[in-house]
Amino acid sequence: MSKMKKRVKANRGTTRKVLRYVGRYWGYLSLSLLFAVVVVALTLYVPILVGEAIDCIIGPKEVDFERVFSLLTEICVMLAGTALAQWLMSVCNNRIAYCVVRDIRKEAIRKIQRVPLSYIDSHPYGDIVSRVIADVDQFADGLILGFTQFFTGVLTIVGTLGFMFALNWKIAIAVVVVTPLSLFVAKYIAGKTYALFKKQSEVRGEQTAYIDEMISNQKVVQAFSHEDESLEKFDEINERYGKCSVSAIFFSSITNPSTRFVNNIVYAIVALLGAISVIAGTGFTVGNLNSFLSYANQYTKPFNEISGVAAELQGALACASRFFEFLEQDELSPEPQAKLCAAQGNVSLEHVDFSYVPEKPLIRDFNLSVTRGRRVAIVGPTGCGKTTLINLLMRFYDVDAGAICVDGTDIRTVSRQSLRENYGMVLQETWLKRGTVRENIVMGKPDATEEEIVAAAKAAHSHSFIKKLPQGYDTVLSENSLSQGQRQLLCITRVMLALPPMLILDEATSSIDTRTELRIQRAFDKMMVGRTSFIVAHRLSTIREADVILVMNEGNIVEQGTHAELLARNGFYAKLYHAQFEN
Image 1 (cartoon, rainbow, N blue to C red):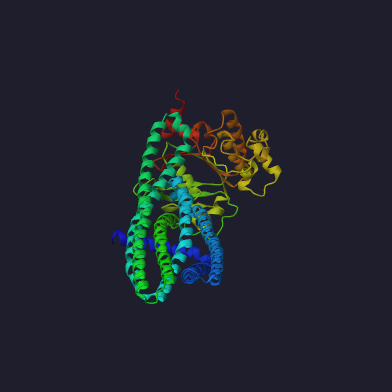
Image 2 (spheres, rainbow, N blue to C red):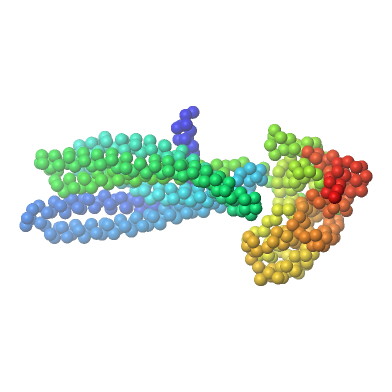
């Protein structure tokens, strides 16, 4: 299939998807069409009145002033009605466009919650943001422009043709014969602009992703004096974006002048043939000629507008196709109706295989059995599969083969929400939403009382610094209002409040000072009593009290046992341990 055919097919598919959203607002759409008909009807009636007024001015002292004033009054009323109908049509069109944008952005946010974590991990955040914000904005602009000018343009063309054939069918035929040339020019240029606008949209997404990356990691950039390299990279992306934009704008901007040139030829033909008809005395009056010239001008004007809109619509469709490409991503597998209620905490992994990329195996034939209340520490070199194991336990990713069971139930047979409600998770990477301290703490237990919140904060040793904040627990958090250690303490407070039957601690105290860490460890020791706990740690001194230590390497358990047992074996764990304390 040729590139042109593929593009046309893609355009049609995108247009159908857009129309499905627009169809939800058929009421506003119907009103918009009605007002478009009114606008066109009144606009086309005015040249008839003007022509009659001209014919009332026959010569010196032969002017029918009474009829002229009557016609002028009628013209003013028609123009006022046209302005009102045009305003109401714009209101309807804007309402449709912004309701559609609202709907698709809502769907985008819902989609983000439903796509697999693998999609989010494999795409720059800035590119996803660009699709949902910038692409949708440009799509909305094109949609408003299309509704505003397309309806009235088509109706104007049909209406003016009818009036022109009524006035003089011979001249009207000459107009119709020349018209396809204008359409051909517009179609050719519009086809060129789609690919250019799509490329522009893609590069804009790349640019947004790069800016997001640089801003969020500005400290690292400055710490390693990488400013010049960052600017060079940005300049390179910006240069490509500039070239794409200039090419797209150039092709879209020549559409109107090209079609206007063709339409001026039409106007000249009408003027010439009309003048000859008036001179020949065929009954075609000067007023008729004036009306006909007005209709010829109005007939060609929509072609200019529609050709201009066509170029804008190509850009809008290019942005819409990128957005719909995101909406059509595969979602998480359907959620089972069954729920995991009040889990006991017996966890088993049976012959588990998993890899992020099929050609790079990570975990193969992994087996593990953990009974309720056991503390399981997971250690190993970077990239051995520790965090991957956590992702599988929480079902952020599904296993390729084998099964993970909680209390004998395969976690794929219960809803993800019910599974995750039975886990408490504290990660090295902290996340706090924009809101009050209280709102961030109660995420895992929205119905918690004030006494429970304070007790959890005291257990996590966060109460003291929270009370020092301007509004205490009601302080609204911003990006830099807390240190990294304080942010991590709040995340620990969440888990202390929820107290689920199973815990996952992935470097949970990595950003906390040693003195506070010892206090947190004592609080964790109390909290972990009777709860199954998975502890990922690089500082091996923090896991000495674990019931069992799993030593992982290249996706497999190479050793397991208590701290003392593993040191006595003098194997892989002993090497890791002594490497930390050899000095």
